[in-house]
Amino acid sequence: TYPAIACVFGNPIEQSKSPIIHSMFASQFNLPLQYQKRLAPSDGFALSADQFFADISCIGANVTMPFKLDALQWVDTLSSQAKRAGAVNTIIRQNNGFTGDNTDGVGLVNDLHQHNIAVNKANILMIGAGGAAKGAIPALLDAGINSIAIYNRSVDKAQALVRHTNRYANSKARLYDSASMQAFDIVINATSLSLQNELPDLPDSVFANQPSVYDMVYLNKPTVFMQKATSLGCTMVVDGLGMLVNQAAQSFYLWFGQRPSCEPVYLHLRDLNK
Ligand code: NDP
Image 1: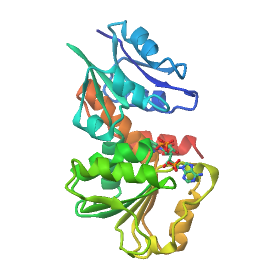
Image 2: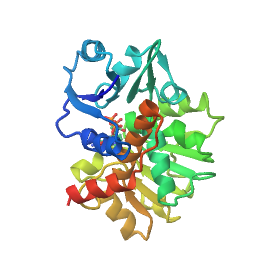
Image 3: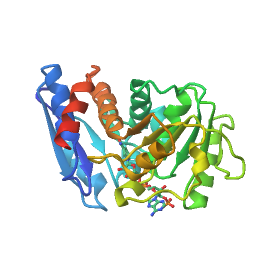
């Protein structure tokens, strides 16, 4: 049924760039897509989703903070990414119900590839153990990483994520240990710290191997974390804008079976942000 309707659920939602991204993707294929922002009450995701999807033209939705767990409960079936991540950021209407997927990890891995950062066999340091870290890890494992060390301010959450990951990942995950002096190939900041201009409490030695450095936050300038990495000699230092565009592209693919081109959308958003 056309025009197709999709939306992003969140609270707050005003800041979301998803409508711009998906409109640009849709115009690449001349698809008539109407993509809305939907503010759901913080305790009312299920009702909002029921109401939205009552219209048969609504083919899918993105889900952002704080509803990724509510969406996991709401859908009928889960993809392998969503199951392993324990969170849903994309809902797809199927003939017989709704599937929940998680495209954050694929978005990150595709952006790493687009920056020619080798993921296969990489030893990774993941800083953070919230939704973004959880979403990223299954796709990193699928891309063939060698190991992942997890660091988080709240150690219990890092421990839980290591245990959860090792249930399906052959002991590739462990807690970050400052005493081990392990060399990392990729260091990923999956915390929100850069939004407050703050750094994670880690020694400079995590950058000693001059790893590729990824901050999931994106601002209109290099984040404090990116600046720190650069000052310590890292040359491949990337922010999260490409992940944002690539996770949207994967959602678009799940809805329409078409792979949009990310580059023009990425450049447009970079420009808007200046
Ligand atoms: P969560 O709230 O689920 O997790 C936040 C994480 O940041 C936790 O690990 C938390 O540690 C840590 N943190 C927050 N404040 C502090 C602090 N003051 N000191 C130390 N650690 C802190 O958020 P998400 O995981 O969903 O998102 C994290 C960031 O990633 C956000 O800024 C978001 O914008 C970004 N993101 C970017 C995406 C992209 O496409 N580029 C996609 C998804 C997310 P603790 O457990 O100790 O509280």
